[in-house]
Length: 83
Image 1 (tube, helix red, strand yellow):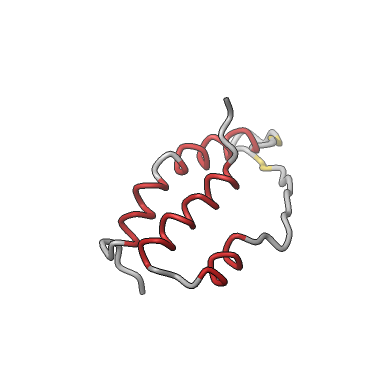
Image 2 (cartoon, rainbow, N blue to C red):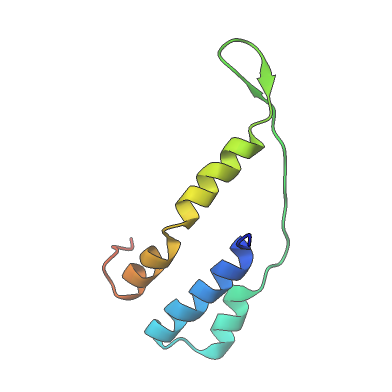
C-alpha cells in the first residue's frame, strides 16, 4: 500500500495540534490546501546531458518523510528550537 504524503501530513497536523491544544479552527485552516503546483525542470548534468530528476527528488522527499512523525512530536514537545 502506497502512503499518501498529504494524508500523512494532515494526520501529523492533528497529532501536533493535540499536543499544543490548538484551536480546532486553526487546525482546519492548517490542513486546507489552496493549490498544488508540480513542475519539471530539466537539469544539465556534469557530462552535458539534460536529465529529468523527478524520480530522484521523489526518493529524497520520501526518505525525509519517513522521519516526519518523530520530528513533529519533538517539535510539539519543544525539543526543536524554533527561530
